[in-house]
Amino acid sequence: MLSFLGIGAQKAGTTWLYQQLRQHPDLAFPRGKEVHFWNNPHDEAAVAAYLGSFAQTRAVAGEITPAYGILPPEVITEIYRQAPGLRLIYLVRNPIERAWSAAKMDCLRGGMRLDEAGEQWFIDHFRSAGSRMRGDYRTCLRHWRSVFPAEQLLVLCFEEIRNAPEALLNRCFSHLGVTSRDPEELRRWGCRKAVRAGDPSPLPRRLLAELQALYEEDFRQYGADFNLDPAAWSAPEVVHGSGA
Image (tube, rainbow, N blue to C red; front, side):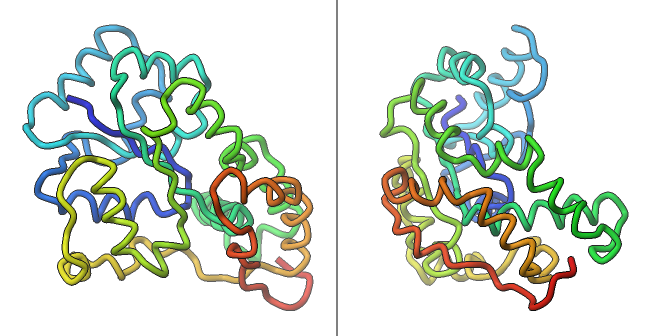
């Protein structure tokens, strides 16, 4: 049966999480990563086929699709009707870092070099509805918590992947109801190795100022929402000067 979903956020470590969780002998991903089922049109037959694919294993089965974090409440309600006991995992990241990482990814996927895109291209990307929604963790959490009990949703921070990946993974295993693993074993799995590391280009100072203005209000609320001191989300590495 479908037992868990990783719901995001985009550019917050979900590929790394997938690569780690899939090595646990009691966890399974029958459809791989980024299935994009619930954020695409589907009918009852498609839902039955989707759920059926998770019923073919005795392991605790699920999938991770970062786009699920921004699903509207009506789709979240549909998911709850199908799997009310679902365990949910939501990774969050400094929203300034997340927005910069996503913009670089889209720029390069579009066939441009970063220096070709120009400052305004990046500003428009930061301000786009898609980028703003993916970085609006408070709204995402409010939508999911309005449907699923709070104890079924585990919120984790990307920064913990850098600093204490073994502890993060064992929190995931506990949340999913499978056995914890020895930290040394997790290191053999590669938990301290980057997975699909993005372009390392640092954030230009003028673009940092743009992102700080966009997320200023959100930062004031993060302590209450995530039990996190916003100071822990230090400013990303920046490059001096104004160019993008």
